[in-house]
Image 1 (cartoon, rainbow, N blue to C red):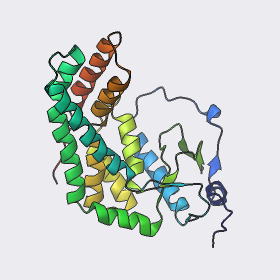
Image 2 (image 1 turned 90 degrees about the vertical axis):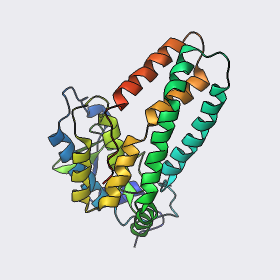
Image 3 (image 1 turned 90 degrees about the horizontal axis):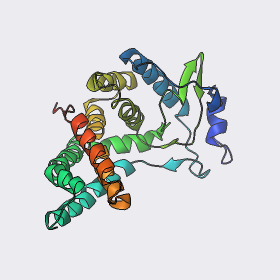
Image 4 (image 1 turned 180 degrees about the vertical axis):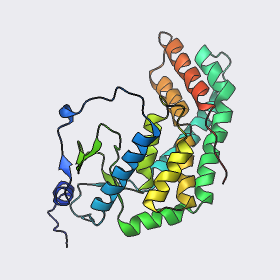
Length: 254
């Protein structure tokens, strides 16, 4: 039985996890390959196994983020939809707004499709499984925070939370997909689900979150908050780059 005073750090170190100083870590300089990611997936699985069983909700040192990402993404769609409608009625548009109007409806449809696919594939059952098992995510599963040198080593537990284990691979693949366009993301999703013993509903959930046009939406939101005549061109170029990169992503219906 877990003591109400036992922190997650106490719990995870008792399980043999070593906390290392992030200053000791060397930044990755080489291109990330599939084999690197498969090894990282095994480390993620090892973390999930060690974290399983910590259900000290009274301790209050882990946030409960189950379901929050999907709800946040739904709010983004509603907010972006209102912005799109407002801009269609605006008489004069700057160069950034013209690009947004040209592609905005398409990206709203893509975002809607992702959410619809999530709910069509037993999302609520996945949430229930996560709650029943008290699943814990590391949050930051990148190479700079998680490594294995005989022992499982973690630099920071700051992003740890109660959430669906699927979210840990979503974070990792979203992190690497921009600079490693030759990676087959679905192969890696399949690999993760096989290692974690997850079914096709989990595969669809992960793929939908990876495909969700988060960067497009956030670029507009940042422009809305901070944009002006001086930085309009910078935001426009960033949006154009996002659109160019995103065209390679296809949401598989399988």
